[in-house]
Image 1: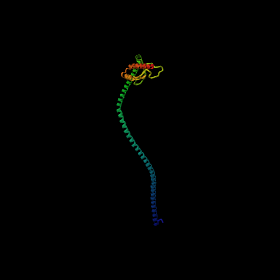
Image 2: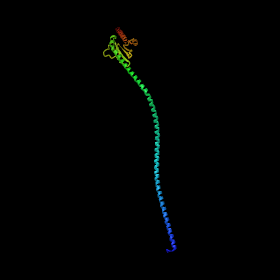
Image 3: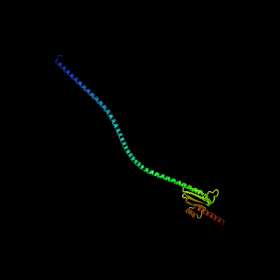
Image 4: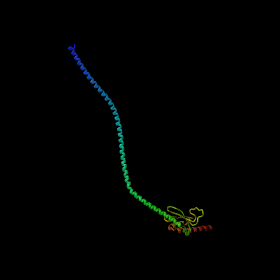
Length: 246
């Protein structure tokens, strides 16, 4: 049978078909493997795409955050520039004021020297006034005995101020325990620092008071006034005595 030509031909065809089928199977297997690799790669790529999309979303969120921070920084920069401009302007104004003050320094120094000079003059004037007061007071006190001896009166300092002294000239001793500011038979007289005398008041009130006051203002003769006062008071006392006798 093996030698049968028909059988040999069939066997040969079968072998060829089998080889052909095996080749086809091998080819299909290769195609399947290739497709499997492609499918695996697609799945892998899909997973990677998902990861990339997630990463992209995170990146976009971060980008938006960075943009907000950028806007905030730009706002701060603009505000900083505005503040810088304001500070520059203020600095310029202060510099101008400083220059003005520096220009005023010599004038202030000159004014200071003038004030010092005026102060020295005032101190000198004050010392002069103080000395004049002391001299005036001492002059009156030193002549108390002379007034008592030649005019017949006692002198008492009533008060003093920045412009002069007020004295009480008494022509008789006050009664013991008397507290009268202006006792009987006395006169209140004021002497200024310029040594000008002025009759202020008498006790009792004299009818010729105005004439006596005017005379003292014109003559500045205090001793003459006191003698005249003493005479007038004695005459008035005699008149009162005669009136009581009648």
